[in-house]
Image (cartoon, rainbow, N blue to C red):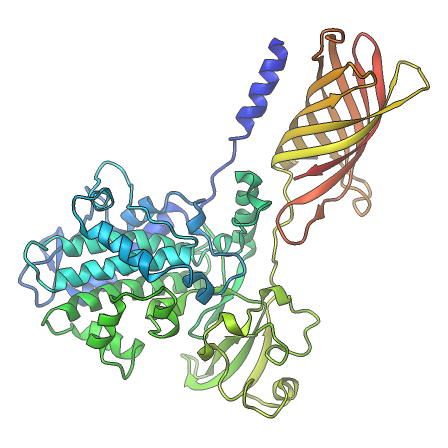
Length: 558
């Protein structure tokens, strides 16, 4: 039994042996947020010695210290708050548009969170001041899009309190920046490829943490093609690749910069101070023709999350990415730095007449419904009003084009992590020609998909009730591995397995050795999740007091 206990301990410990995954590395979170922070401070504030910033025109009622917490800069605080990378609310809701994700944030949720924050005696408010640990006030949100907007709303309301110069609010702008730091961790995550396409809400994908991590790491390096509500389209990647590829870095930086500019816009408009020139120019370029003071009063009012996107066009929300398989690319009258006319992208939609008729290579699962995007994301006067069919317009009009993005929807199923197996066995005892059938159940943990020349390496515990005799109950603990196939088109690997077998009932309490040889099929993916099935045809031997042996067919959920 001592050997059995050791094997069980090894298997249980391996269940927690998942390497962590990150949306962005800590230094990436820190660098992009600090860059945005210091850029905004140069526009909106003046330095106060070497340790703080004071808003221009302020008499010192509000300050923003260089180090928001202890010796931590704004970017370091953002990185600290973003540490729980596998939290449910750090991922996009898989397959949902920005509008759909924001619909999950209600005005009541925002108001309840604000009441908890502004009450200085509450635990949520006290969490803002914790110096020894990064423990932000936590509120229930279902995705990283709504989580960003919730904390950003709280930060804007706190900035309004600071700008209004209410007695005793000297530290309100500091509180606003800490809340904004929490928001910016979610904001940056929204641009990470691994957090856009990893289906953490799928009922099979999160069977174990490694399934989520493997999917996350797969997409971070493969990249995801996205489009935002402003009409930009690009390919974004994941951690360690933010600075490697400029089209990935620029949108994240711009979003962090915009978000901070919104905070400062609210602060200045809450009081009587004039906006700094740079902030005023930013407002004119992002909300043209709108009275800014009136607009920011709505930003801090009570509405559902999607209202700030579909009706108020909050600038940062316009930059959030959505994965897509096809866009309409429309040539504008504005030239870029190379004097070439810029193009604006609109997402193609699921309904007929709203996507390219030649759709044989378009993954329609990446197309959104008309009801799930705002009306202004449908090209005006084209899909709804134009009498010319889309295919004719694409082929003959120089300003219109259909762009297809080769998008990988699901990561290949991984053998790493929790394994559940079920099978049927036919067992013989010694050279007895009369076999008896039975069942088997496996609980295993995949350690590696590939390790040098080996595949499908795992630790396993297998239970065989009624093994040849009705009174026998066998438990086997083993190490399994595969040798790569010489014909990979037909099967993945030759499977070898060895370990110890134990009889668990008194009349069959003998123990010995278990050996297995067989063939692993190629993985059969489900197609709607990262999980899949491996079929294993094998022959096994149990070398006990008497030799029990026979063929088995096993199905493994991985």
